[in-house]
Length: 217
Image (cartoon, rainbow, N blue to C red; front, side, top):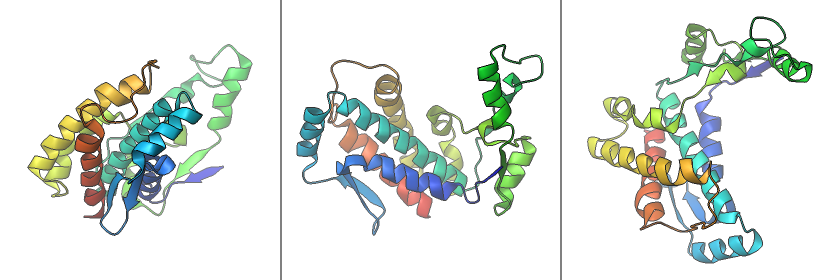
């Protein structure tokens, strides 16, 4: 069975927007490639918490995931690859790292039967060939921090300015430290739905809009 990725950045871009505007607390204006809070965003946040005690946590998780997918789409659309190879499949049904539990090992055996193909994207196929990636689960797209530390490569292609690079780097640092790495991996009882000192409105939304424009350039 083959998985055809084709132009992978486009599905990532669409996925990113879908996650960022989940529940329509934010909206996407395609005419100017920008996201913004809806006029009734605060009311929607209150309703979210009333209907789901973990609603804020889920909203931030999806927003952070969408933001990460967006920056990866921008890099891939500009043929900047930060992909590496996962060697998970060594844990399959044969070899020195074979898992002793048959039910676990057979999952890797099945995955090895799925191959990845991007024959319509010459550059991306060359990247997978260079890394000897043959299966979709061997693709490691890297962390948000890895992309933050390579923003100079977008600047070098004139996709973002120096000022935008500095702003993005700081915004991603705050997003990772406060929202992504805490809200996504540790549940804290005191959920914060809106901005912490304006982090959503003053940092993340402007950063997302920089990336949305960079994708179109």
